[in-house]
Length: 357
Ligand SMILES: Cc1ncc(C[n+]2csc(CCOP(=O)(O)OP(=O)(O)O)c2C)c(N)n1
Ligand SMILES: [Mg+2]
Image: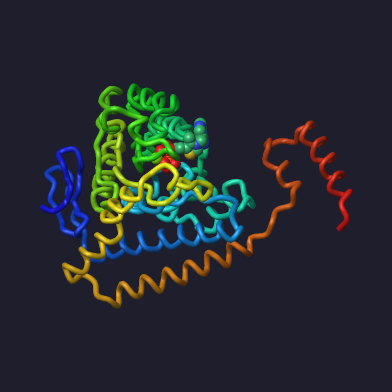
């Protein structure tokens, strides 16, 4: 076996594209299903690349790249059923893709022209959450709700390694545990919380934290889309069948900057990135498809062409998004009319009127 699976890490596909068996987590994927996962991985990487370029050209205020985390997001995202509900951070563009959220709507948030851009109920995908860890509490509350509705559904909450140090995340673990809530905590351990390395968050592997709260924790190779899919499927199915929460630690790496405002060369060494490049989540699926003759060059070329088309379309529609009126910011503060807001709106409208048109 050439992979780096350890007793602590579930891996089903090595970085070289070799399939490995696992006694608890196996998965039977048809060539068509693997090709579909490959397509997802390539397309979300392209959306991300295009978004970084758009930010660099001044078309977005900021962007949080998912580069390197595609397998964790596509694997877990494709494990969800339509009835399940996902609570993302600000980096879950791959999960958004799996929930059929138009990528341009994600870009609108970072362009500052919408307040989130999609209807969480329509996609069962909550709005992006910037306040680190807070969405885990919302997710547990939602999970307790569907538990009381007796729904055949589960909730998944995404968060990072840094978020595990937040009070909110620890409180959500306790609530989920004692109420046996149908939730999967999906931690993408990308080794960094901006410039803070993992060793400043924990002395033990993160997945082991779960045992202190009274539910199972598991570490999966976060760059292995097969393993992420298998492990998340099992955890979601456990949640749906009344077996309570699971913590999944997807062991991965943030290959880009924290966001476009960050310069990681100031705090991490280049060799670290080089080592992780060899574990690229897309390359191993490509190697697997090639080796097993499930796909030929025509297939890879067609996915590449589709990515080019998608990239161009996302770019075009992003730039075309109209700027909202400055007065729109008063529109969604309260559901009902509010005296103070009315007054502020009128004052600001008068101020705007003072400018030459
Ligand atoms: C409550 C809170 N504190 C601090 C911040 C600033 N902040 C934004 S991202 C981030 C690091 C998060 O790291 P991690 O949870 O590992 O997620 P990653 O960005 O690596 O995906 C911090 C501290 C914030 N957004 N919210
Ligand atoms: Mg992190």
